Image 1 (cartoon, rainbow, N blue to C red):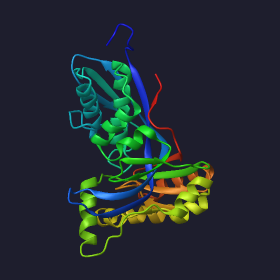
Image 2 (spheres, rainbow, N blue to C red):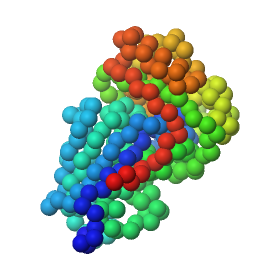
Image 3 (cartoon, rainbow, N blue to C red):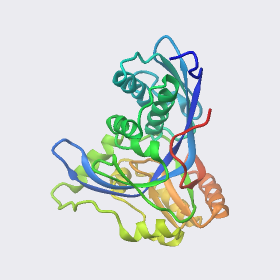
Length: 304
């Protein structure tokens, strides 16, 4: 750091919903080829980086007690990778103000990794290019690059190769947060078990879904939503079926498990409908809480 370097940097970074998650068969390396259509939504974590003698992490907010505060946290790993590339020590304290559900299939951990990366780059003045930041994000995990980019994008490969997508309007969502979490690797293992002996098609993005995003047509998007991991998530977490049913009965245009779950996502016609669906979900007793958010939302953004 130089004398003119900032004493603190805060980055805001969004949650995501997978409006399509097409999953191919397991590859030799254990990963799966994906056609993963991401939409960033307006639930945010904030990551603040300040100079410190050593790398430390603190966290506040809902479910903060479930967030690891050691070097397994993607925020810590992001700081380490950036520092290593630039020949410096990762002397930073990272504070995460968490509002994205934890272990909910909404990329909260990935968001923190992207947020920490951008914050440390600004704090240390490393001057990393966008390409370098995205490369580090891909090393951190499949969802991390999208957390940096935001908006809407198609992720291919294992989800880390992004193609930005046009969106023609605002989409209103409700996210029902379950009691308990689901391990993403466990959900993929269950997907492999459920599809064993079957011909799993190569994943492709749905042209109808991409058209709906481009035109801002909520009704068309509702008809096109899909998640190939949903059967596996329901197999491991059967009570999610009652949540999906409650939201649909309350007037949601469509319902699906968000990513690997166990958060469930409901697409609503407008902001008022989303509020009504959220109220009904809370009253149903089938989820711990329900959150309203709209997308697309911007990716990781310096806010202070």
